[in-house]
Image (cartoon, rainbow, N blue to C red; front, side):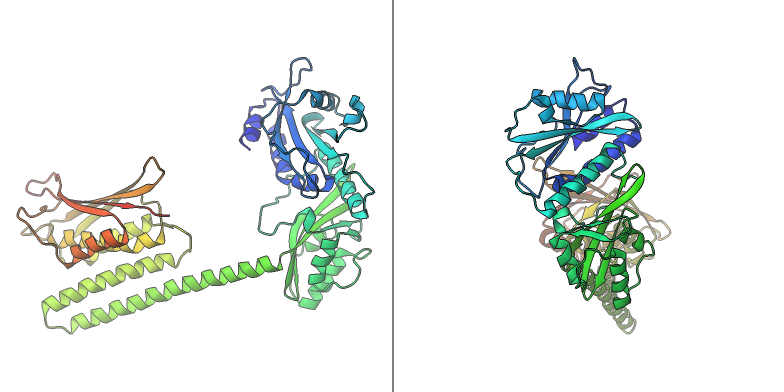
Length: 506
């Protein structure tokens, strides 16, 4: 696709709307390949100016499609390659003269294994590209009615593509799960929206909805209305336009526990609609699995929400218990436990908002950094800031990381300025960034700095909070942590720096 995009962007003669139309064509031309039982190749002049010089110019293949309805003839990928000499004359004639060219017109013997047709794509009177269709002559036999209908539909779409009116870029065909293809089922409608042909798979798909009678000769919009009356399900007001083939769009029909997705393509000639194609696919099992996943996601969100509520209840109980205790040491211990429980509750509250494989934790950590300073057992105020970004982290890392930050910040606020008047504030800064090694493995590096009194000069034993930090870093995060004396600007306040490194595991 890079070759395709780069070549179109470099073409000075190509209008922006023509480039967008070619993108739309290539994104949708698997349908054309399947209906035509042919390999498709899109050719474009191999010059930045885009103007073909018959003496010097050449062509380059920008895109390729292989049919799923028959065997492929072009097994290797030709995208980015220059055109072969035997095809060049055909494509040049189609480009310059704006006419369809066949290999039989170029003097090839009749028993050739493959027939090729070159079709110019014309928009606003100018050729913008050439499509070649490669069809196996060996596959020729007495065709079935379905094959004849497929080829007829392919010819109609090719004629519209040659005029530059299909696909219609004004219609948005956004990708979604269960998009139908030719092999899933095909209906052909006349100008009144009656079914003139239904493939076996299309018959089976509508049978799942409870449509028992013969389809051919019936109105597809009438079938949709009958299903609506039988189920009582409200439908989009624009759906009849799709079911009659008047508008290119997608929709779904549901009945009796089954679901069928439909896509309509109006066929036009000379600006007048003369028929329509409707692709259909039975997506009952696909929708059932999607509903199961949605139900499971909702259940997991509800679990996180209830865990958060239960943890807040535990925190409230600890708060009530601390008020009834006479021992200051006991009240202090319960307040620390309450702080840790509320940290875990906050993480579950964030996880209940979404169920992605990774969590964007920057806002969570910024809030946790501020709350950890406010919840510390100290009358001293603290200023906090977050520098850098954690980015997306696996959910398993979020809870232990939040607990580690809470304990380190609380410890800094409670013990960072001993003997200093309480009106003086403490500054706590958290810096986070990611590094990637040569093997592509990512690692989180985090630095927590404060401008407090720094580490004690003599050996010191960490309390329970810092022991919890070490256990979480080594056990849950598989990382390392170290405490260093900082380089604070205030005299007598060198500060403390805590450095944490942990791998980001997928």
